[in-house]
Each structure stands twice: as structure tokens, then as C-alpha cells.
Length: 256
Image (cartoon, rainbow, N blue to C red):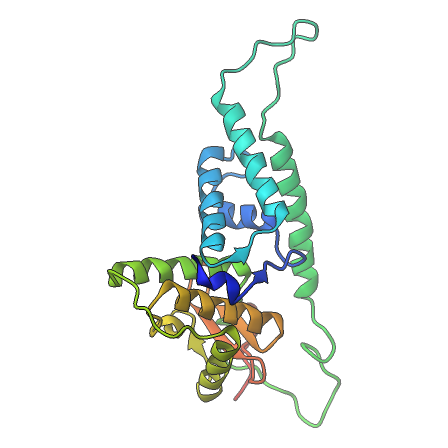
């Protein structure tokens, strides 16, 4: 019996990220050609993500499952021999990936546009009215916000490392989500920032790893912490929201 199901239950924020976001993340991560998607490879990677979500008891939204079914259907169609051209029109059946590619391109267009708008200067955040002195920007740009799927990539590495280091799980008192959130907040109030992987160093079981990850997700959702990454696939850094945060890519860091 999986005791973790009775202790925590968190859903993926569907408004913020969805299955098309995950597909674009996989395409960029593995440098795939969006116009010629290796559907078998993409389906395998996508299903690995769903298995990871289930392993830590995250609710998998129905739209993610629907996309998994769509990918599997496309994959099966591509494995079948091509049907002969239509006798009346002489036209061959279209590429089964065509509709998916169209959706991805359309989604990518709006996602890129949204990111451009989000990156525009805002009064009070990036631009300021004239004051007695001008604030000088110092240091090179370092960090950018980390997304949900960046976190899942990092979690996958943590779980792989944990399974390699321990032969069995130790049975001990299991901490609650609220207690772990308090522990993390206390730790981060002492340090200016912490690397994502470092927050899992003392985690002895898969449950401990899952509860820490879910605590970080919940603390991000309620704006207690912010997550930044040096580059795509790079180290993720965790900051308390109350502390001065780093500037995003393309901007200088805040002076201390």
C-alpha cells in the first residue's frame, strides 16, 4: 500500500503549462526537427515524464493523458504500411503528424509572443521615474526563471542518483508537506540561495524526495520561493521570494 497517497495531493497547474508545453520542451531539449518529428522517440520521452509524475503522486491532468493517447495513435499509424492512393482523386493519405505539427507551431508562435510581452519593460519593475540618482546595473546576466519541466528534469537526476546510492529504503517517521515546507523556508532564510539538488542531499527514501519536490512546487505556487536556472539544462537555484531576486536574462543583476 502506498502511504504517500494519504499525505499529499497536488495537481499540475494546467493554466501555466500543458501537454503542448511539454512537447515543445522535449523538442528543444533533444534538438528535434519540429517539421519531421521522430514520433516514436518523442512518445517514449513523453511517457517517461508521465511515469515520473505518477511516481511522486502528482495528479496527471486529463489533457496530458489525451496527448499521450494522440501520440500513441500517431505512432501506430506511422508503423502501418502506407495505403494506396485514393482511386478517385489519386491523392495519398497525409502525414499523420501534420495536425500535431500545426498545433505545435501555432502554440509556439503564441508562447514566443507571450514571452516577448513578458520581457518588455514595466514601470516600477524595469523602468523608473527620474529620482535623485540613477541606479547602475552591475555584473553580467546570469539566471532565468525555471519552468515546471526544467524542475522535472532536475528531479529525474535526483531520483536516478538516489536509486544508485541506496540498495533499500529506510523505514522511519514520515514528514508532512507542511513540516517540510517550514524546514525549507528556514534553510533558505539562512542561505541567500540554494541549488535544487542540494535540497535533496539528506533525503533517504523516494518518499522524502517526493515530499521535498512537492514542497518546492507548492512554495512556488504560493509565491514563497522563486526558481532560476543558469541556462537550459543547467543548475536550478532556489530563492526566498522575500529576498532580492536575480535579474532575468538580458538584464543586469541588482546591486547588493
